[in-house]
Length: 368
Image 1 (cartoon, rainbow, N blue to C red):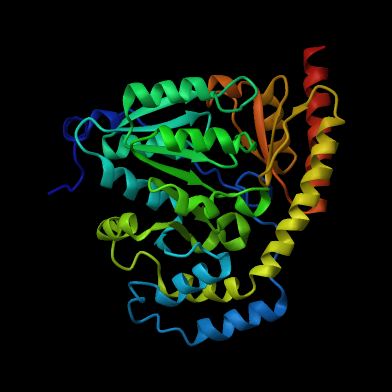
Image 2: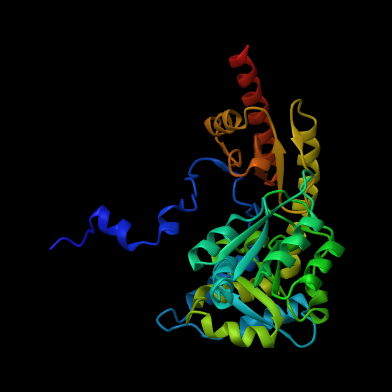
């Protein structure tokens, strides 16, 4: 008997909102200068690689991992200096944590509120969980529309609010006082998503004791651990004890626990790389702003959003020249003709700028 369901049966059994979704697309990048996914372009020092290799060689991969990831969680608390009384809950990247939160707070009629444009997984995971999603548009300059956001909170009473700080894909950090007003106005849980904390000038981690309805979410992916898929929620044990019940067993494997613990012991080295990326970001931003026809937005992350006429044509021209960035044209009305480039190493950034100028010139020639 065939194990393949007829299309009509698939459509009959699946929830309509899932049928209407498009899967999160990750394009192939082999052979390209990869500047589309906000990864750290710098490798690890040889001595750190040797240390990891030695520990991995002796790892008990025939055994399940420590379900509580005790050593790794202690390393996170110590390295990042969590406020007294706060703990962490680990996830397979931040995506798993967003989904866990949506499942936990999705009582009948509950809503998840986020601003847009922002991280697309907030909306997608609300859909996965069958939760109402409330989108509040950002102001034209990508800042928070505080009046509209507070009005939406009063009207919708969301159980869960996500704010990316800095925001993806715009790169800006919202006004901290405005975020505080949102937290204070919310009866529900507010999660400040600090995926790009290593490149930003501020954090809400120290404010955790001030707000009982605040959690801070981070990932180590942007810092140089993208391949480990490791994120965490920081906050009071009142929240984390309950959320722990939904965390799938053994969600962080043996090797990610070992490697991440080693890398946190070398956190200063990773932060030095982040400082280099911030310097590279300044150079790249200046280079973009020097190109005629480009509007490049200031960033506190490890990427830069920029606007250019015929963005999709320019994007395709870059790809033809061996450079892959992110095409956001069409993703949201506020992102019309916008592209996003990850800050790479100096040679990668130079390659991108050269390819961008060539692609722009081709676009001009074609329209002449």
